[in-house]
Amino acid sequence: MLSLPQEFLHKMAGLLGEDYPAFAASLAGTSCQGLRINTLRVSVGDFLSLSPWDLTPIPWCSTGFYYRESDRPGKHIYHFAGMYYIQEPSAMAVAEYVAPQPGEWVLDLAAAPGGKTTHLAALMGGKGLIVANEVHRGRAQVLAQNVERLGIPNVIVTNEQPQRLAQYFPRQFDRVLVDAPCSGEGMFRKNPAARGEWSPAHAFSCAERQLRILESVPGLLRPGGWFVYSTCTFSPEENEGVVSRFLAEHPDFYVEHAPRGSGVEPGRPDWVAGPEELARTVRFWPHRLAGEGHFIAVLRRREGTEPRRPSSEADRAKDYLDYRSVIENILSRVPQGRPVKVGHQLYLMPADTPELAGLKVIWPGLHVGTFKKDRFEPAHGLSRILRAEDVRRVVDFPCDAPQLARYLRGEALPWDGPDGWYLVAVNGFGLGWAKLVKGVLKNHLPKGLRQTSQY
Image 1: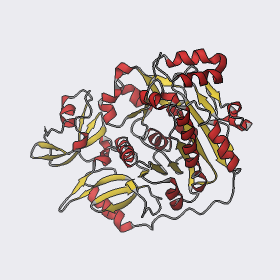
Image 2 (image 1 turned 60 degrees about the horizontal axis):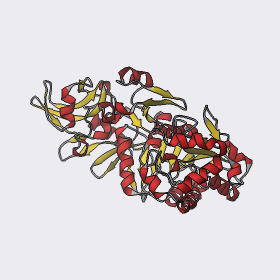
Image 3 (image 1 turned 135 degrees about the vertical axis):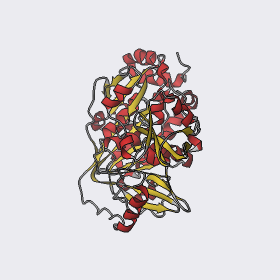
């Protein structure tokens, strides 16, 4: 049995009654391991045909699969290639409840490290706009790295307070996700730090912070839109209690019915003396299903007058033609988007992105490349959205080729062919760039990414 706070156990025994022994026994068990296939890079069927592991479907996520801890997929070349994201199984349900549609504007308000942002992007087919925000700059950098690794073309990463975002996007988003910082009770068997930090006072302080975050949502969400509030804690104060307090202050919102699959339980309004509509929320319990503890609420804003969405910057046809001229000698398929030059860097932003001047933007869109004095160098980020057929020249290896380990270490490789830029790929999926000069492929994998995948 884990060493758990006695006050926590006593509290849960009082809440769960006859269910408590099964709950307590589940905390003594092992955690489930999950990965979610990145369908922006590879279809589920194609990945399963390539996978070296025996994967089992996760019921609430069509792209999610359980794996065995001994598989160690985080060390495989396919992880480096952005073909999947390692994610706790219950957490995969959150984006499914957001259910974003291609072309919508979506905000992930507390997005690091990026599991839910990248899931939202896959559900949207890479179309539309996702603003992924993180208030802590270091965590925002990690978020941007995961967006790049998975080849997400329609995400902008910001490092702002929610109130600032509301000034730039007043009631503009179709959907908002608030995966709130919490006391982490649902992760106790995975996270020793959460066990060590827990106290009743900590849970109550988390609830106050969560409510402050939710207070920014009405300024961001359009009439008729909805937002998802989620936590990874069992605490009623942080779950049904926070939702109840929000509803009391915002009568133009109501709880949507959240569908429940096998093992998923309804919320408990009786635990907070709240309105019956709280029973439309859902709870994931580790003694009911193969996953950790989670709470999810879907809240819709009543219909009203929808503010006009700001128009994007006027068409810049000349810039677009210039962009094609510098990249089409490398690519056979030129990705779509709005080209934006930031200093010497070229990015592709989602086509309908509004003006962002004044916001702290960590990642303004797909990094296409860098203008040097007499040349253009393609960016690592560009390689992550490409397949072998998208480029003029490619060096494509099977996943067990020894040359891949050498490439990941930053080594040059001998190769025959015409000089120029080559996409280095595994089974057709882009990993990074190399430049062939007189029979030697010079390695352009960023130094910070080298030797990160030992498989």
